[in-house]
Image 1 (tube, rainbow over the protein chains, first blue to last red):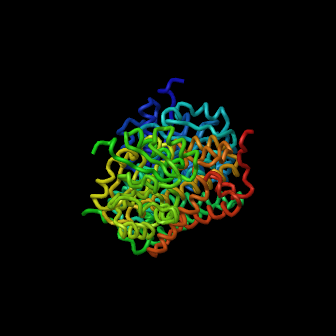
Image 2 (cartoon, one colour; image 1 turned 90 degrees about the vertical axis):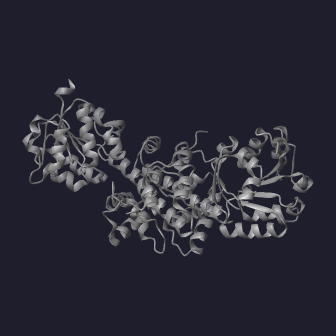
Image 3 (tube, rainbow over the protein chains, first blue to last red; image 1 turned 135 degrees about the vertical axis):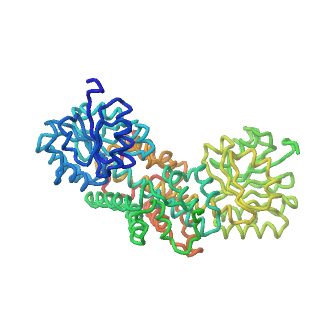
Length: 301
Length: 301
């Protein structure tokens, strides 16, 4: 199929979705956008999107594929099956790439609902953040039948730097993402804990950051998130409440498998505590603010 | 001073110390070795060391500098001040670079004992592992007077890729290392926890490793240590009991500062549990073996 004949709708034009949608345009796909935010919709149209708006039913029967980059399972179900849900308006067999971070059980339930009305699903969480999405270089960890991967190939090529095909069963992709989020969430909280200890002990945080990022204690998240602590600027790209959600999914998955997850459970408590203290909408590194008696850098005004 | 006139003794010819000693030889320093293991001493002499043996008093008065790469504070005090301790045999003012991972209190006590007999100390923990030590590219995080740094410059140039000068007070170097070890220890335990969850959920561990190391959940320790879990080969380069020691220092430091360290304390418990179960001498990633009911890869015989 010629790429110019391949039409895709990206649902959820946040930092990830907008980047992915622009990557689709850059790859020559006919790209539609769906979001309740009119500014995001106008931005996508200005960037070369065919059309964008809050109601995907308007163009649903023109689509060859759908990419869902919304926040959670509830949003996935609302956009597909809710009051203005567009699943029923898609052509039979349309593949839906579900890239929210959801539980394996959520993935299986959503798949069953799609299958019941003749649609296909790829259980396809993503990683890489807004920067990778903007470059068309997200990491996709996906499961589903081989034919569904094939039907989504032009979309996957446009948005992904790397596609891991985890297996045919729906739920495996979600599980791989949840294992990944366990690490991501623990690493941010560990970074905060380490920086709190350094600050309490009188170590300059910029020096501590420099040491760690040049030594074996480094993590992708430490390097990416701790500059917020060093500068005292907690403007969110990813918020504390995202990890309240994701670490909730992690601990729920452990519980379903009867596997205790001591570090993930501890980190979950730290994010809950941060959210409860009023930092839920700040950058996820604001979990450090729950350590009492620690002198932290303030943002220069 | 000409490098060929600068004589250094490396005490502790384990994987780190041997690499550092060879780096000193490669840099043209007159290099002595100290270890109770005769094979390590012969290996250093064969590599171009001037002399090596169990008793440093034999050549102590020829030394311009000492590098201590032993395991803990007890070993530092034994080699310096114990029955065959050589501190008293060093020339007045000789700088001693203490690179074991020890507590800030240990560092201050050892410094006071050295100072009392007219010697100088650099509180200089290192990171980077055996590979970086062999390349003469360890990361050194050090505190002490500027003159002590200067007196050790030929040695630091030989063994370090990067030297962080944390400040003049003895104890700051130890603290930076302890903050670093908090991250290192939590990251290994988190890697083990994540891999246990993946294994329990039926995700192939080689695929999980591949995903994480290409995504935002990665850490230096995950990338370096989890191949042991994937292959089932727990031959140690760094053992579980090293982190029993180091996480003990971390939690002790938090307690001294009245700062709760929820993740470090949890990880400490995991390492203690692993050591108690009989895995103390295995690779540190063997902390994963304390998760019950998880099918792990076995080493191919």
